[in-house]
Image (cartoon, rainbow, N blue to C red; front, top):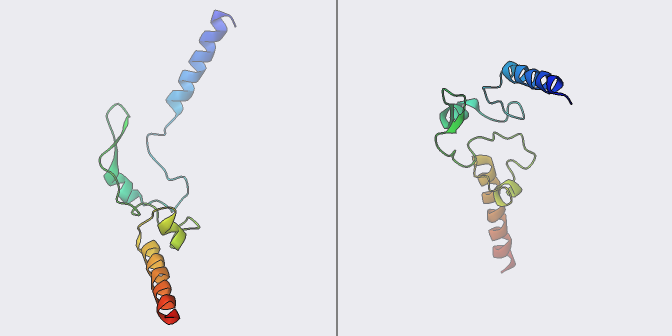
Length: 104
């Protein structure tokens, strides 16, 4: 590649970069992440750098689109502590206790 072609390629890439308007964050799966929660946790500096203010409470961002959400698997394997996952785990423990009690 000669110098002129290299410069043209660099100019093209710079133009592409300038057109990129992704100075905002969108969830990968629509309607699964509360943007209200994200607004409190993330920000953008004047230079366009994404910064984090604090860590989200476990289970406060995902709202239930994952297939495991609201299940014992969500609680045990994915360590989700949202109300539906906690309730599923509590029901499982309750059933185990009842079975043990009935077996005695």
